[in-house]
Length: 213
Image (cartoon, rainbow, N blue to C red; front, side):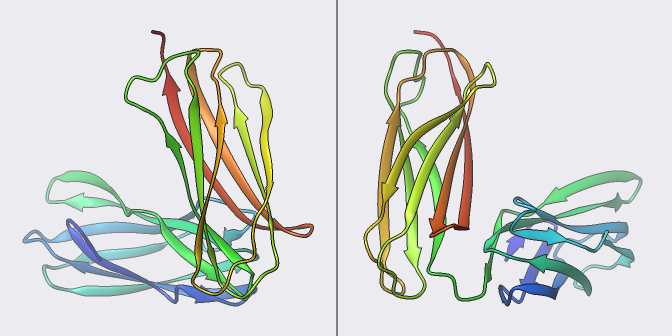
């Protein structure tokens, strides 16, 4: 994967539940020498994947050079992480972040791949907003429970919808939609939770700002 100034890789992308090690590989894809690099793996859901290592330090990374930084995690459920690097390029400091990276844990029934707010640009108070969750089966399942929730601008946490999903075969994707009608302007935080019985096996978050007409 590439995002300037790094080519980067996180491996493995599939781990078993429990403590495990991930390897962050960084390659300097630019023309400047990079120094004093503080490398971190950051979890988007500490309940599912907790990063135990505080981070790694790379004193110097010349152009085209590579460095591998080991990171220990405690994995319970599949979830996303992202990498950050803080360092120096010449006399200037810089901060770098990777896109989200999915880590798959064990043999759970399905992954909650994404949550999106399906809205027209400039959606306003009183207009309907649709939420879309994408699931992908990993092993055959008879059906799972999918919940949509929303945190409103005033801090209320509201149940939007609870859906019993269809059975999924490995690799099969399914789309589920719920909708809300915002009554306030401000920032809304949208949540989707996927359950297999009483076990939460997926979580996704999306944020959107609602204005006035």
